[in-house]
Image (cartoon, rainbow, N blue to C red):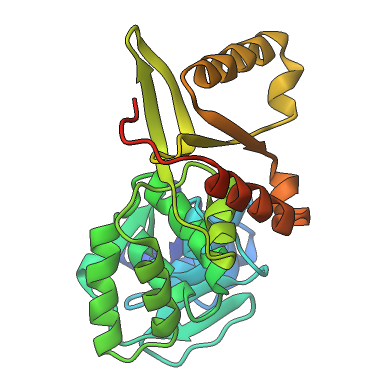
Length: 302
């Protein structure tokens, strides 16, 4: 019985137990003596097993079988690109179900290619998860989660676009904001941090041109720097700065040398913190706009 439950974080169902050869009376006796603990109807945890978040998710998944799958905010947390908004476990099912601690979403159109398995739990894949969340999240936090998923290789832009086209044909909620997001973003490299995503959103908010992301700069001797953002025709570099990073003297010296080398080559380096973007976006936008206006165009950039 424990071996059976081990693959699902200590969770078994009545169907599992009967299929393994236990009788109805044996299941009842194990419930009475604490060998089994009921979590949901006909869904049990092995007595003494750790009552973890993953066990709660596995129990909700098992309870929703055979057509239920973990989805939405719970799926985002399983894939580690988002977080939960409540303590409920979110599942998508084709039937009308209800249980304490489970948020049930009615879905009839989840395809086999939109499902995956994560830590022993059947779950919507990252792309389907993001599409599902578009009906429950604002466009900016949704973009932040999307960029995390893209950066970790959990999905890619072409797959998001093709799934979106299928999504629109089905008339799903959230389609309008997905269209806006995909059109504004384009097939560019994913951001590598929430700071970078916030910076891209700031540029859109203030109608500023989009720079090249993660650009590698070299001189005649070779590699000089890989920068967060670069306006190539104006030779302007924009970098995220972290106070914690500069608590290390070696890191501080390395950054100073890097900035000096970029300046020697003619690059203007603008540096902003996450706090700058959150607390004074107008100032950040003005600095960038003034720099773009003041710098001449360069026909040859290294």
